[in-house]
Length: 246
Image (cartoon, rainbow, N blue to C red; front, side, top):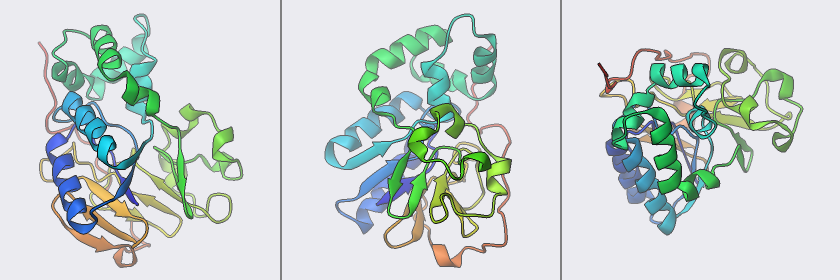
């Protein structure tokens, strides 16, 4: 089973990562952590590729905060429109060859309704609980199906600083926060390696059965090799492919 971090439209890196995985495992299963669109190379192509992949392999797709905002976008929701403008939504507009956000939403949900209907709020595999952005500490004794999806999409620092297992035994696997290298502290695993932020930052997957990371550059790192006492730098700069509109 491979868990794959935030894609954000980086179709070239996604194709390379899947190719590398298939060289290791001819019949892999995948769980994608969410955020397939915005910021990166081509959101439309990324969704189309994922749908094609799901025809041949067992794929589970989680919802990210970017999908959530697009799905729930309304014409008069100023904050949501500003969010998408600030955080890479213009790249998605461009990939769908549209002129505005509402036109893009309508076209995206019409062309790929099946994909968006498949999105789940969480997944579980062995002793791993997967959610897009982590789990707020106040929910650490609450089962995932009792937590509203929005509460699993926008978490960051309070969650990352929590030093305990979810439900006393589960390791939380999350995206949303982009690291230079995979994050592991013994309690949680961060697999968003900020592929959309820098040209040379890779897209990363984690093999949950053999406990190693593999990325689009075909670099492999064992889970045991990660320094649990160190947090790799968090990337918060502008995406390297940001679209500029006049």
